[in-house]
Amino acid sequence: MKLFSAQIYSERRSQLKKAVGSGLILLLGNDEAPMNYTDNTFRYRQDSNFLYFFGLNQPGLNGILDADSGEEIIFGNELTIDDIIWAGPQPSLNELSRKVGIYRTESPASLPAKLKDFKGKVHFLPPYRFDNKIKLNEWLGIPVSKLGEEASVLLIKFVVDLRSIKSAEEIAEMEEAVNITGEMHKAAIVATAEGKMEYEVVSRIYEKLHFYGAELSYPVIFSANGQTLHNHYHGNKLAAGRIVINDSGAENAMGYAGDITRTIPVNKTFSQKQKEIYELVLNMETSSIALLKPGIQYRDVHLDANRILLKGFSELGLVKGDVEEMLQLGVGGLFMPHGLGHMIGLDVHDMEDLGENHVGYREGLERSKQLGLKSLRLARELEAGFVLTVEPGIYFIPELIEQWKAEQKFTEFINYEKLEAYKDFGGIRIEDNVLITPDSFKILGNPIPKTVEEVEALRA
Ligand code: GLY
Ligand code: MN
Ligand code: MN
Image (cartoon, rainbow, N blue to C red; front, side, top):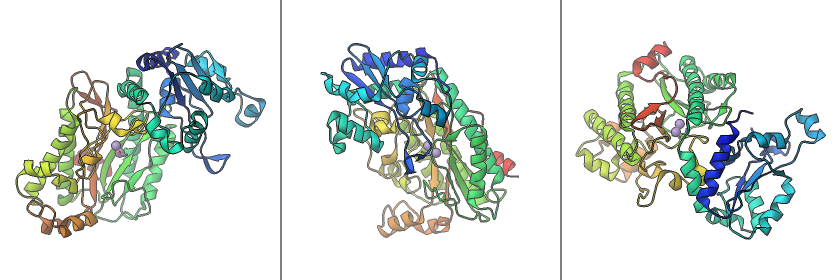
């Protein structure tokens, strides 16, 4: 188990206790999740908040931090001979806890009484695992349906504040995750070929992932039907003339995520028509990245990417009229119905369990109801130390085009007749992971082929 120094975890916990001020902070670890019976489990994934504050990547642990007394305890079972028989020799919980600066461990059985006897407020985060919901329900007497709203907003806000700013050690981990991800993407570009099944190429992605001892940070999206944003079906045959979206990422040994997208021509080269849209998406991506620095509002960067899209589509004759008016009305949502990006860290959508608005919005910055903008997970002003994704895309979703056309939506702007020729186009997305530096930005990881020439060179 790879860990940062004990001092790092201790400092994080001290900052959290100080910020919360008083009460008991309860941080639940994740248990194993059964697949079809108790002992046959899904891949184990520790809770990211637990990882951040306690580091220990194993099931059966919970932690408390007493903001008043300062006491810190990890609750978990000590090793038994049965554990050693089935799972082999390993450090004791006591030894492991000391590595993360915790000097008191107790049996899980003592936690419920501790919570019940505590006189002050118990701060907990919104649970997302069903078993943790049941535990909180039993321990705190809060109905399962009310746990989300009873979670401590104070605790959520301070956890978000801490986890949003990535330290140098974390950035090194994220670079590693992106570099593994880059190898997966290069392998996929090389393996893509007419007549192959999508899953054959996906197997190359997995090969690289596992070669580097990593796991997926989210399910692979590899699809010739890239117009479906989160398409997890891999059973299509790659037909000549199609383009394939590969949105896949590695989670490294310490749990940090990469989240990269590249779009690949099934033919060895892009057609002229594909190139026009590809260059537009690439321009949206690189122009957005060039704007990044502390203080800029990510919502404005999203809107600027949409502006580039609408200008480009005006030149192609797919839309007409005043670009600023179209931008205001949300016409671009037809072609990019998702947000420009999100925070990334221990989670691919970092801290989404704590509530998207707590992470990506702030008081006075309301979420839009427009298609596209409503799915923008990160809208607030950026700060040095944030790591985020920039992932513009252009999609031609036949069903959506048909619906808007039938509703006669924005007929003064959208050239529905010309769009007919794009209904079998698919989609293009390009995504990178970017660190906000004190005065600018840094794209994480080694470069991954991205321009038309670079992608075609590797395809060849
Ligand atoms: N891979 C999911 C996303 O890009 O948000
Ligand atoms: Mn992605
Ligand atoms: Mn993403």
